[in-house]
Amino acid sequence: MSDLVNVTRAELAKLVRRPAAWVLLAAAITLDQVFGFVIPYLSYKNGSGGAMTDGESPAQLLAGTLPAQVITNTTAAFPVFAGALALVLGALVAGNEFTGGTLKTLLTQGPRRASVFGGQLLALVTAVGVGVLALFLTCAASALGIALVEDQAVGWPSIGDLAAGLGSGWLVMAMWASLGAVFGVVLRSVALPIGLGVVWILGIENLISAVARTSLTALQPLRDLLPGVSSGSLISSVLPVQIGPLPPGVQSTVSGERGLATVAAYAVVAALTVVVVGRRRDVSA
Image (cartoon, rainbow, N blue to C red):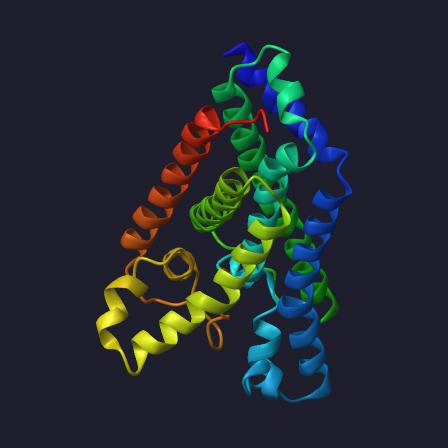
């Protein structure tokens, strides 16, 4: 247990000092701010919607940026865009030890392999939790600022809604990060896992979903098991009353309960895969 704690602390210290981790966090915050606040608010100030806002009225655009919608603006990108960033982080943490040739040195220092890979996973879960909190705080600050500037009522979601939304978001991001770690350990690299993971999230899942919805309905059972679809359904189930269309990737394809079970199963299986493959992996080459 002490080895696991020590490895987790060491991995967190490495993440704090790793510029890539801060770049990924900055990218996630920028995505949330641009699509959740900047574009809707500027469209509202211009007095009309448009293609970028699906033709929403100015009143809808403003309402979508207020504190009541902070859960939506924090978690809406998790099934796709922010999820891809979490996958990249997972691949970096798990794959960098192989590409840098430091895993052999680390293992000779005494920690068991299970502690090494388990510590990496715990550090990832902690890091994405901090990231979710940072996204929430920045979104809350922007929503509060717009409400005060526009002299709108400041009404926050209930504690229960906040806990459900942020907890579900944390689980979704932890799942993507764990899947990235699986790619990093199995492929023993960083670049290839990142490429394959991003192509899967942004391309293959959308293709399967589109085909299953139109020409090949026999693929719907497969579609309902996809991590992105399950993530979008879970996030959709915990959002408050929605103003305007659902964000990309957030959909009610399956029930919230099934989405929760599927996302949790992916996270658990991914964690077990990292530990099992890591324990058996030949690192002498």
